[in-house]
Length: 638
Image 1 (cartoon, one colour):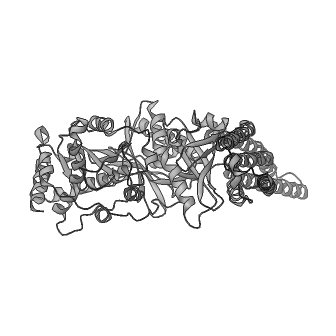
Image 2 (image 1 turned 180 degrees about the horizontal axis):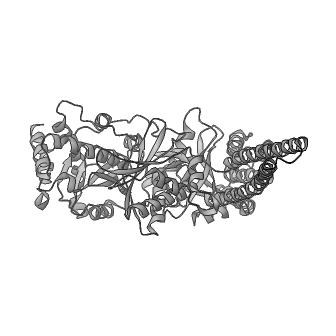
């Protein structure tokens, strides 16, 4: 970004603060330090100090003008006139802001604390579609990267800005950006600013530099080859006078050596220069996988996301292209059209597995894939080298074969700590509810490993089904021992009444977040379609079922599917162990996302259920009927 554009961006953000200050002109603070700090942290650069000083002078002038304005007598004050004047001044500031932002290359979006868009420029509109003021940001950009960036900024000792990478909801485009908090004069967060770029465009520029590098390398290597060849020819003719030959040999050899050194120096310098131009940021695996699945579908390939999504660090656009190249190679060598994708935690990196049933791929074959060219002249190897990554293929103990790709771990923590909940959900034992969902029908004799499960969880306004309401419903499918991440289901529900403060502290869902959301009958109908003939699974499932069953008359929707409870079945598999979700996850090696939501809890429960099926098999429980009988016997004794 040029210095001129940095100043323009600073002035633009100043305009944003001016809009807010115009609406509360009488209370305008005399300093601009929170705003200035935000902008400086977001942008940096030589022009920042000058622009921040300009910002301070501007707001000081506005503040002094406010103090010097003649104050009308109290009886003459007309609040409507005050509001009209404030609205007119806000409109003027907004018009100026639109002019300033219009021609900026970077996308810029200002959001309030409710994640609704307050202002944006045309570059952001090109990246995100239609980011109209008042529209929720998460209708245009994936939720998780933004929330994680926000959490990172709110942590004590966090930087002034953080990088992030996300995707549009239709997975057509990856977007990279930076976020900074906008703080009110007292230092509390009042919103945030996003600067957005298209990684594809940045990749094109870097790829052009790469082509130039290769051209220069060819031009230098040719004279080196000629010089060395000449030296060899001269050496081959011993008839030349010894003194002349020795001098000539020395010159040619030294020239070749110097050119070789220059070539290596040029190569090193160029790689350093190019490396700084590739944008590396924390990236959510689900965003990357969604875009990769969409790209692969164009070639007739089916990619299924399994497991719990994780964070990794890399160049989103380049990784997308490299992974597409590797998957294409796998399809060619194996003849398969479908693969599973999963990310796993490791000590110092995040492992990406592309899985199938078959033989491992030889290293020599993988080497040929690495040399395949990608868009813009770079190769798969170029991309993976920048990520310090070398893929290999191996067969796992369960018989599955994977192409394993180790990628850098994220800068942020994988799972940010959350505030401790005000209350924890108690164990809810209702054998009558579980009996009502024990009819297995034609599925009873089927092996658990063959069935389709829908693992679900709810968030509610309280603990009593007769008095409280569901505010969120999350679910994910499990098939053939795999958690289908792409089959995730998450809906916020409008309960039709205010949400108690105590429950908000537990699940984080506010009245503002449910405004405009569908009622329970709409969400339950969607959930019933998702479940189909599958088997429901929940942790402490009787609690969630009690809410769903209590709303049967209200919604007219009844769920009659058989239900399994991981809390009860964990006691069958491990009779003396702690059956709580966190303890169970710890024993089974399942990562727990402490950012509490219905979907994250459902994901955790699904991973637990996959491992729990193996423990149940060791106790002779293989079919659905056997599992239902085991939990019924235990439930009746509680």
